[in-house]
Image 1 (tube, rainbow, N blue to C red):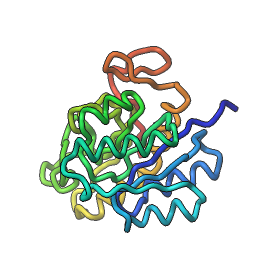
Image 2 (image 1 turned 180 degrees about the horizontal axis):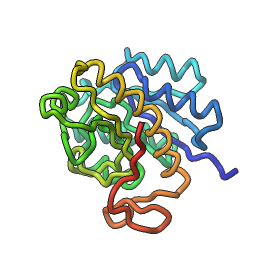
Image 3 (image 1 turned 180 degrees about the vertical axis):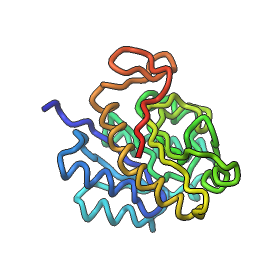
Image 4 (image 1 turned 90 degrees about the vertical axis):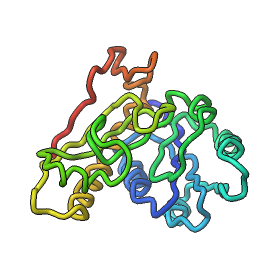
Length: 215
């Protein structure tokens, strides 16, 4: 097996996606080395998950800095100590600066609870229900300077049950997220999927659309 890809996971809260990564690594389902879990919130429960799993942790509080630029510079310096080859945003509640994205270009992934390009932004589950959409899901994408607009890699798609609540729909989408995020990260970590010239490429070919898994 190839050497595991050194991966940093950035969180702000409970770290449920982080736990999915920890479990997948433990099972040998993905070839990633979780080299650090970073948070901007010292009380984030995800830090406890990391410590329990024996993963190094780091924390820099954004409130200690006068602006986003200086905070992101401090985060870059902290992450660089661990030399990550991949950066996973897993509920990291900060908008990244251009400098941060440029520093880790092609190495940063995010997951958004919608079938991008539909429904960027917040409150996606209620918006899908209000629109009467047939399908909903989640999208793993490369991070670029434009929020929720980076090249897409993998989508998990589920059928909407019209009478369900936004909370019930959110729970089903989150269960899909825990599966597809690990898979997509493993693809990028292995080099199977790469960001080239602003586009997602799979084994050297431009992906005109993301791969879709239906659940």
